[in-house]
Length: 87
Ligand SMILES: [Zn+2]
Image (cartoon, rainbow, N blue to C red; front, side):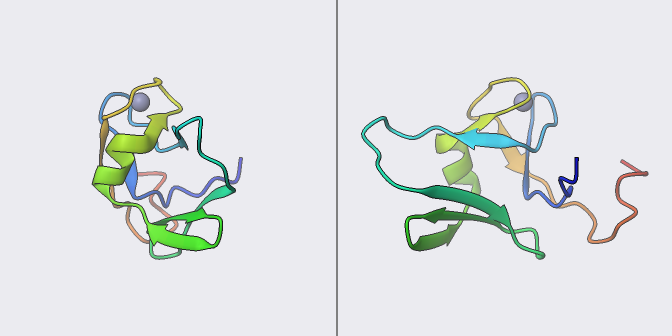
């Protein structure tokens, strides 16, 4: 479990920061999600990259914790390694 708690969004319902994208079944392409050191969540679709914002999350992101959608809020963890202790 090396998932860094550098997520930009968290679920209002359960506090989870992990999500999966809900895409139309007609969608074809390769989607990758990764997080920059700055905390920005980058969505890469085929060769195009963009930064996920709250609107995007609430339209397309499904919480892995509670299966909710439309549940996201901004979450900016402290930019240091001690964040896990003082949550
Ligand atoms: Zn949740």
